[in-house]
Image (cartoon, rainbow, N blue to C red; front, side, top):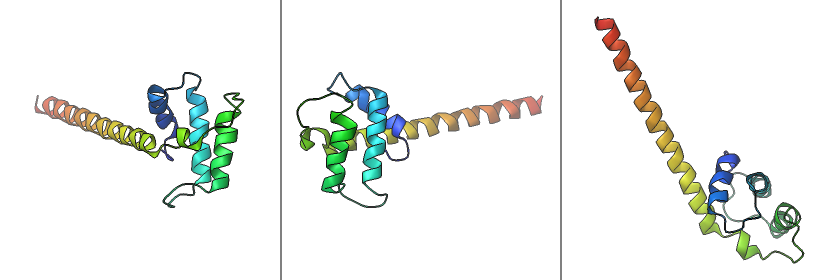
Amino acid sequence: MRERPDEAADVAVKDSSSRNVTKAMLTDAIKGYSRALPPGVPGLPSAEGIRNILEYEIRLPLKMDAPVAAEKFLDLRWVGEVKKEIEQRAVSRRQVEAQQVEQFDRTETQKGAK
């Protein structure tokens, strides 16, 4: 998700239960989450990082009056599902590219044989 926030936002918007969230908002939230959690560090961001994400990336952009429950937006199962779908898309894209290269090579070989 850290490397491809736009793709992650595409997947998340599709699976989001909130209709008020846009792709741009999710992309910004994913980037904010990535900033709060340094690369290579397993686990969750600090308590302050979580508060900042909820306040500045979710509550204020959505113009929510009440505080946001961390459990609602930091469900790591959902993050895992988004990550899994992004990885599946990457594998599918590589397979399509490999098939296109094979087809091109066959076409070039047939042209050379004539």
